[in-house]
Amino acid sequence: MHQGGGPEGPRAHSSLEERINTAKGDIARRLRYIRHHHPDGPFTLAGLAERAGVSKRTLSHAESADGSNLTLETLLKVCYSLGISRDAYFLDEQVFQQVNVELEARAGREAGCAAHVDLLCHLLTDILDSAAQARSALRAVPPEQRRPPGPHGLS
Image (cartoon, rainbow, N blue to C red; front, side):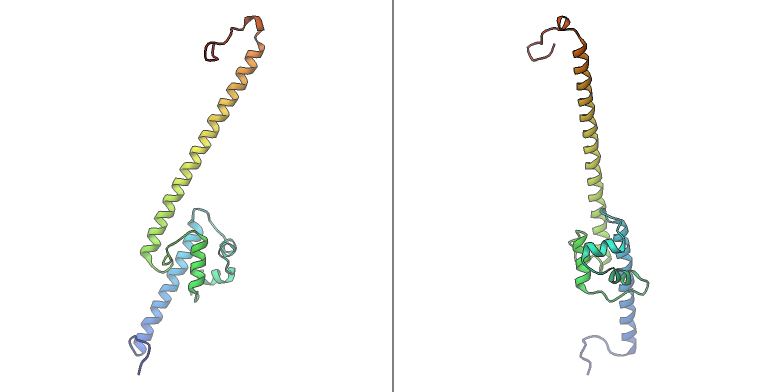
């Protein structure tokens, strides 16, 4: 009597092996993708392994063509270390696609914010430079030629 709950026979075993190999290949592809395309990346194998608290060898085997038997713990550590809260990221194509779109949008927002901060810094620097030049120019004017400031400190 079969106790596994699934179909019996050599054909079922072959089908299961195919599914396992397909899943390993999908996980390897997704791991390589996120390592190279994460907004905080790209990461080397060593860099991602350190960030996730797993061994470089484990990630290397996971990315290899034949794949590796990864534990759920390892997959979740990698997800967590990359800020991915969807546990099925490496296991489900739809989740993989959705999370990547979300990460791209986040990266775009962060890049946009960084560009605004850079622009603001340049504007403030220009204002300070102009104020310093005005101060130097006023110091060059003899005191008797200076007009008293207007009601709001402007002349």
